[in-house]
Image (cartoon, rainbow, N blue to C red; front, top):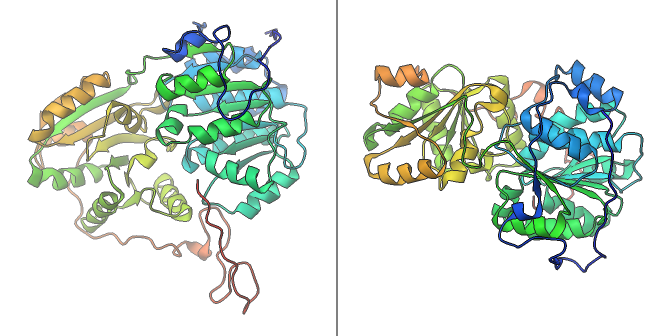
Length: 475
């Protein structure tokens, strides 16, 4: 396939942080879609049709990736042609490869200078950064490109060392990247390609001021790709300020859920709620249980372990090492129930999560869809269940209506046959499960494979030397 690249033009450089959009560049400011050209693209059956570099095509085949998902078929031709692209798709739709393949293809053949990355992927959370890196690092390595992550909670010095060696594709959270820019360990003037993933979550988390500062440090003539579940509100304003003549692709309405996902609402008495949740968590298969607060997450996980369900909690109050260990245990099958707050609602991809349980109803329809998106990913089937008490019925009905979901409502009690039929629930073993301790891995290894320091040896120095103070940096 031959791709022609039309010359791009941008307005003169403006002062950071906010740019004043002229009406000749941007349409009325009522919606982000006014600045873009919605395009319907035919489905492409093979990655070979995109004209990707041969090494990249071979790496995809070796990984068993042959047929593109709809969002990839829609956005890759324009992204490879150098156009700014807006991609709107629900979570689990394959957005990572949609922007990742375009960036790797356009980086092919070049070489990064020390501290000067050539392309940037901005994501809202550490977990999403790790997920994106897991997908793109093997492909980058196969094409001779260096791909690294810069996120909070990890060693700043190690990140600085990686940047000094030269990074072609940098995957970063806004806070930690801003730290590196301020410290002079990273310069963004050579970044010719920027991808913003989960832009709506970055807006929800208050990261857009940092995102603007980062974009102002990159060349205006560079290509920008933005992927988000929604393109209105603060995200729409970001589009109007920084995305030039974009092509917009939307593979599903923003209120839609995937076709392979079954939605259920279980009405339970308050006294039965804990027992019903435990029976569902004791099912065969991976289950994610969502609650609203980190304290409730720890409490529910402890209650499940007490009745014999291998469970762990995941929330923002844990250190990065603890979060890595919890996720590794869940992925490896050492625990089959993960109790999480909304920190895990986006950006964590674990294969074969067959059921999502809302122990606490989400705050709004957007949170519902992003929680639900942990199952039925990439065409797989999944079940989403929400536990409600009678006083929550009206609120939950409004929430599911706004989410575009029509769930089946069932009244259940512990031990009901209908509960087992829908979810595979079963009685827990009642044999308490001991929570794994941070140092309990074989050989004292961490989840990232590095060895723990020997007992009595200060971190970062010989025996008897005072350990260096850790620098506290935000995400």
